Image 1: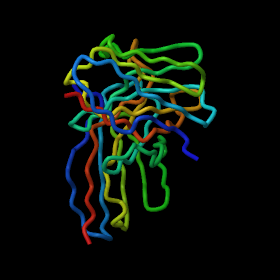
Image 2: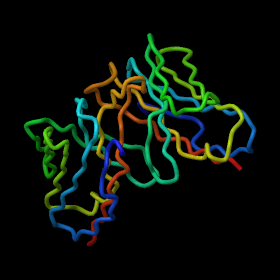
Image 3: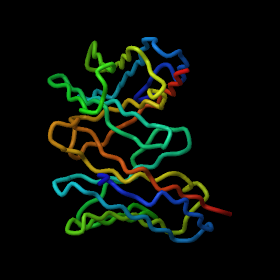
Length: 113
Length: 114
C-alpha cells in the first residue's frame, strides 16, 4: 500500500471555478501534514500546513480528518497561475527510515481561461 | 539571495562514472535532506542529516553517500552511476527537522546517465 495516495489527474478546470483535491495516508502515526505546490521543472514549495481544526489561507482551505486519514485542499476562484502539481505531504516516521517528508505523487491541475 | 542552492543544475554522464552534486543553504538551518524525483515525478526521501545524525532511507543503494563539510553544506556523491539513477535530485533544509518544520527545497539537479 502506498503511503500517501492522490488522484494524479489532470484536473482541467475553468478559471474562476472551485476545485478540491483529496489524499489519503497510511501511517496513522503521522503528525504533520502539508500541501506543497510544484510547477513544471521547478522545486516543490510549501503552499500551506494542514491543521486538525482546518485552516484557510486566502483562496485556499485545507482540512484534515485523522480518523479517516484523509486530507483535502480546496481552491476557490481559481486563477490561471494556480496551474501546477499539488503534492500531499506527511511526515514519515517510518521506523528506521529517513526523517523527511513522504510525498504523494501529486495532482496535476490545469486552469483554463 | 538563494536560500538553498544546488550545483550543477544539469549533469549528463556515462554509466560507471562517479559524480557529485553540491548543496548549500544560507538559512542557518540545522537539518538538510536529499530527495530523488524519478521520471514518474515521484519524490522520495534519500537522506536526512543534521550535526548529530545521518539517517539513510533503507532503499537507497550504498553507491550514494552524503558528505557534509559543515552545517551549511550537504553534498551527494554517487559512485558507479547506473541508468536508473537518472532523475532530478533535490536538496532541502529545515530549521530543526520534522515533525512540523517547513522544508525549503533547492532548484534541483537533473541527472542523466547515458
